[in-house]
Image (cartoon, rainbow, N blue to C red; front, side, top):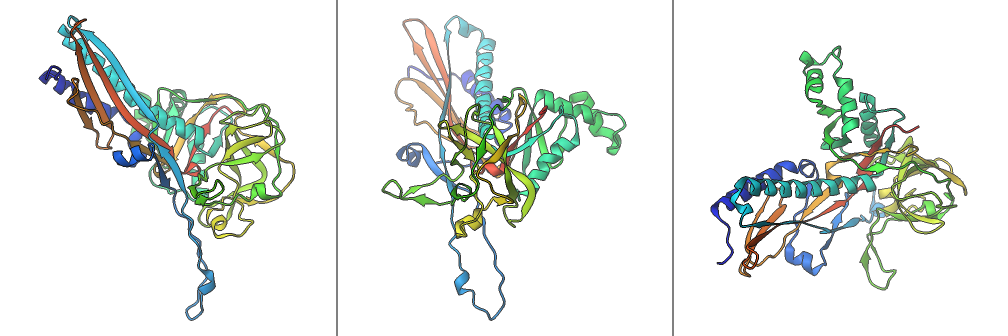
Length: 424
């Protein structure tokens, strides 16, 4: 074959794949669903992934009939797409190829960029769609800050295992500074020493923590908004499918379009609570006594916006409402005020339970007999890297490209959230 990889290039690709896997720090802490390439092509690269079931229990006495108590179980699902196709292309002349070290550095840069793309997209989805919001008035630097994230998850029935927290460098180092105090009474004081020497935090309040060298930002909210919580708007009814457009289609129940007094000053990403709307434990359905937190997903008009999660009060009494009830209406009002939580601009620190976020590795069907040399390999998560090489005899230039295809979905926004510091 005119174009083929040398032994040195194959070894370099194997080293690159190993380094690529090592760089996928955050993606190793989300669930992975490996898709079938043929099925995804026929489904336009979109598959509906199930949300967790929530069941209801009843009192039962042996000898008494429960015939009238059987429930319809509503399985909700969310659309997940292979929406990210990332490529690093570069060229090298026959003169540049004499420097093998230069070739290796370029491969390392390509690997680093693609791994970063995957990590960034996971953080974008978590930062934009996580609905558990913890605002802190001061700067990062205390165990209690992380414990607030633990509390909001516990109160709403999120699984206690596999919890992760990714913080911006400044916020992470602020927490490490709190641990570095020499008077801390950890066993052998190793945690304080490590925090001082390496600015390392590790496990805190049930979360495995990670330091980001990048962070999403959130601006201070500027809206003054009220909403009517007296009627159907506070009685969202979950449904697995809908026939509203003439045929049965799946329904994405993570979002709800609501009418408000005004969306002036409101932007996607804003976090808020609603007067009289309290969060409940998702399994017991008992009120936590704490305001339910919401996120603005999009601003649709002067008086409508899409929020997450939907307001499911269970007022209608249907099986689906009772199973997925997420709020208690402590009080209702035609002009209930929204209290915005992002009162100051800050970095967005994200926390999540592993099953909330899902990574979908994709695959390219690149022909190996079309003139270009092709190498492909997958990490143990199923994320595939494809490397191609093509030589142009006219310019004595070799073109390389490194490709990966993947998708990211937040299956359950109420199992992921954001921690905001410096909120006045």
